[in-house]
Image (cartoon, rainbow, N blue to C red; front, side):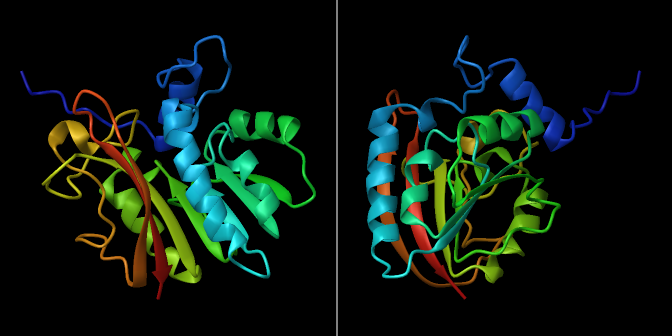
Length: 219
């Protein structure tokens, strides 16, 4: 009997299922983007570092948050921007966010960031998004990043040495279980940058890796 080949679901359907079945937790809380967006030990150092960067500009930046999730993080950054554009692939989540979060400089968009044209901005935020995507999707996104001046990238990666950018099927998990993680500067992505700055990190318990945030100034 021929071996069955697993055909991956489209990323949109995968992400919709994650929220509908609460695969990142948050049962009875509606839409929930996981502990990385809600645990103060993880979220607060990130917010402190990103806020410091955004406040360093005399004229506030326009920010594009790609994969904004339930917006528990983004809602605390909008005040430091000229405009904050928050995008996610899950339409029901975006509609929920539009109802809950209303500010004069805030806009929500439903986008597949690997396929759709991205909004114009000074700075793009990708917070624990790429880690869930296939290499093909990450490459599609990487090709669009040269339109921005800055990238604030957060990734869940192993501690110590690992093989970067092993491919996965887009979904709930990430590459840490196969001792890998996303490194945008390495093949096949080869992101072109002028400089990079480490902003913050959080070491997870039980050798489950680390969540690292890096600021890149892009070419």
